[in-house]
Image 1 (tube, helix red, strand yellow):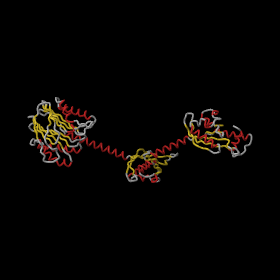
Image 2 (image 1 turned 30 degrees about the vertical axis):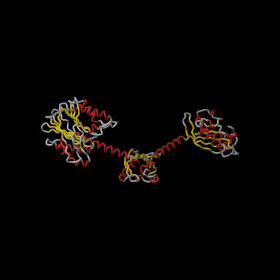
Image 3 (image 1 turned 180 degrees about the vertical axis):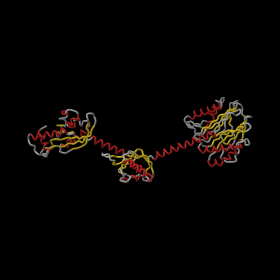
Length: 523
């Protein structure tokens, strides 16, 4: 380094005082070298045009190269700057400004030998001679990476806090609100200006005041409390359910100086949870109702004279409005009824239970099927009218000794009678209005005779009106095909075949209506 330049530089550092020749100059120059070489930040000397004259060991150690590799080069061409063309341009412009005598400072990044970037607080100090001409530039770089990362972390945290849908609230240990994010404003309805400096108790219903005081005591003891469920009050007075997490904030001495609270509005979750509990309770009650209703359905009689039987009832929901029953009367008479309350709700099941009770009270041989339907209709009419429901019912009376069949119909879909000898189907139909429309209705009665092998199928419309994915009905044609195909089998096997066909037809679709069926086969 030229002696004259160094002397002027030392002169500048010592307030323009002329340095003595000899030992004093060497001593001060040695001191300058010690300061320059032992500085823990990056330092160097540049010519006014930006040519590197000297770098200190810290800067040299940073680039892990030879000092000769940078001496004599323009500063912006050295390894500190080549990772960023934008910063190279910024440095060249800064050198031009510093060469005019101005102090320049900006933040930059430097690449480490491992390829990592550090943040640097960079400055250029001009050194002037006695005439005010800039003769040297002193670049300095201080590593501010930790500070920058802390600032970035703080900024990210602030962004997260501000953009969070949760309420993030800062408080003093005594419960005064010190910070309030947008999430808190959205949940509670208060603006930041309305709550800063106010006690947190402004959000607490009086019934929860003691709970808050107990929580504050726990926090003062240093406890971290997570997912504490409680109730808070909005500005408009509405009570909301909250899940709160409290975190005590300590200073360097470990003293608790503040409290951070994160609150999430779980009102809707609480409603959903209550709804699930209610649904579970209702489902359990419906399961019980289903068990009770199913218990009302009698087992198929297995010992009817000259008859094989099978029956089944499948409700579309837990409980339904389909019903069948058997009544053994004197003289080898067996009465059979199948009925369907419009709808398949709890109300329908209750009315069907009432219908069962009426039938059990009224069935006897003194009443023919038509007269029995008329009596039941008159008794149920008022209740059906109030509930705005109707019942279809088909009533059959078997004379097992004479193999005759008397029947009457109250608006029910006609049963199918398969004549085994002829291989044909007949519909058993008779005139009669469905129950619940009016009183004093006359129901037509008809009689037919059964032959060996004949099959009688009583069913509700849930069978024929079952739909597939194309909204196509199962229909009576498919029902007849299954019966004809399995006519030589036991009624139980025919019943299984019908339900299998029905399941294949509807595929994944649930039944839209209750399904009930009784099959008789003469032997």
